[in-house]
Amino acid sequence: MRKRLVLLVILGAIAAGATWAVAHFTAIRRNYRQQAAVDLSNASNSASYTWAEAVEKVKAQRADAGGPVETPPELRHYSDRRWFLATQLAEVARHNVPTCQDFVDLAAMIERGELVSLPAVTDTYVLYGVGAKADESAFSRYQEEHSIQLLGATELADAYRRLDEQRAKVESRIASLKVQTVRRAGSRGRSASGKLEQELNAIAKEKADLDQFYGKPEKREKLLHEYESLRALAKNFGGRAFNLDEPSDREAMKVNMLSSLRPVALKILEQVASAYRRQFDRPLPVSSLVRPEQYQRKLSRSNRNAVRIDTPPHSTGLAFDIDYRYMSAAEQTFLMAELARLKNEGRIEVIRESNANYHVFAFINGNRPSDGLIAASLDEAQAPVEAHHAVSKPTKVKSRSTKARKRTVRSRPRKHRR
Image (cartoon, rainbow, N blue to C red; front, side):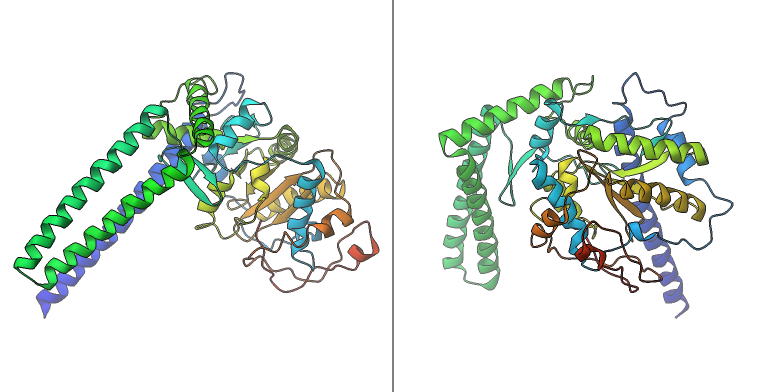
């Protein structure tokens, strides 16, 4: 009995050690992604400290960390929970704002100058969490909720040859196994045959996917051209060259592409960050900027606030998130007052989210869409929603129309995604 108890203690210690190791490795990879963005900080960046030092300032212990935080009505929900998202969709429709489906679209927007690349750290803000879900996978096109790897002419020929070789090998093994099964029938032979059939089906599906996108000449030429354009951008992206054949370079390039924003949104970010820095002598932590639809879908599997609709706000480059996780009550109160003022001026839409972020969306001309345009976008805004913070009292939210003035903020926790 005593030996068994000792064994259980040892196994528990091993399990705890393994859990710590996984968490530690994950943290190291996250810091690597953030540090990758630092490499592309342009030479004109005037930050008086490094990215790591900025993060330390963000996470530093506050003397007044505790205390209640009262969310102003401007950062709470509307009574119709769709109104917040519909407001952003109305702005997209009003100005026909282009969005990005994948990193290929994002690259084109950056090349056209529609998006501005942000340095990883400045004296007023630091990118902390941007690109956290970027990975080393090959760049792909995202169409009709389906991803297809972006290939060059040589890579495409190699892919077809590889699939043909794999199929031939599996078919040969299936034929051989059938002969053995006839001679020596048994459940083991049937099980092995079933696994090989599954493998053969997977190969056939992969080839069908290639045929769907590369089988027609016009589609193939378009994809090949996009591949070459992406490779050309990678050779000189923000003053640095990336090798698309190198997994770590692909990941670093994705992080840096995600560190982009439209100029009008950047102006808002810089204004808020400057006010915050003057008041508290800390850089503002920015956790998210532009997010292609493809990246958004991946993020939604771990971030319940990442909306899944045809036009998610972050895919426009007009939205960014501020991380309030480490802020004191005084910092949050000050920051929310700044954001509420900008909303009352008609320059932004904003909400305080339960996952420790302020979601900010900038209006292109500095004025809010009309209630009529917002109402027309309500149906599109019917997305699955998640739990949000509670508010203490029902508070009316100002609006331009009588109908909107009747909307009040509910006193119970509501659910929302953006």
